[in-house]
Length: 249
Image (cartoon, rainbow, N blue to C red):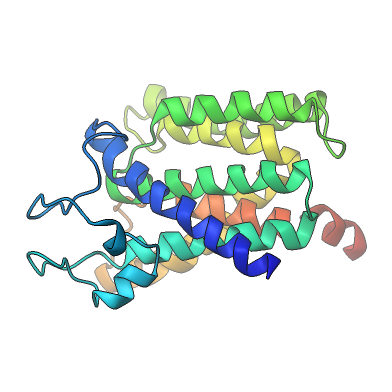
């Protein structure tokens, strides 16, 4: 029952995350107007706004205009619910569980925005870095020093790559938002979260990119980095990359 309740609560938060993902890139208020169909603009009734369930009941279409509701909506809600369950399973009722649920949820929102727009909203990332520094003071498994070192270890290598492309090659090979993203990851997950984001994220990103490269016979295309870096960090934290590395040696 605890897991079920956490999943439902996480899915409810996921419904709000969908609002953030849709509205923030458009510069819209996240509070007004109330939820409505983007196609016909008709307000969504409460019984059509129940996470996951309403999508299934409506068969993925707006009740009024019958336009398709993107599958991503229930997937984000489901992902948020699973994150709540996973964080409780790994850390129990603790500050760490809450910190990492908020952390992973923020990465989920950023990843979806980056996937849509190839941009990352700076206020969310800077707020995330502040969140990492602040919560590290109260965590028993992490210190402010580790948070600071993690942020620097994440940001500096990406900053050098960013400067190389923008100042020397006169092109954008990496967005500055990715530099700030890595600082955010390091401020919460530390050095090992950064390592997981870079190495595991690179492997996952290559797995996604290689079929496109082979199909088009061209490597000149853009992919959003945030979803892959976030997934790499998530795997590193959940499966404790540091412990796996030490066991290997």
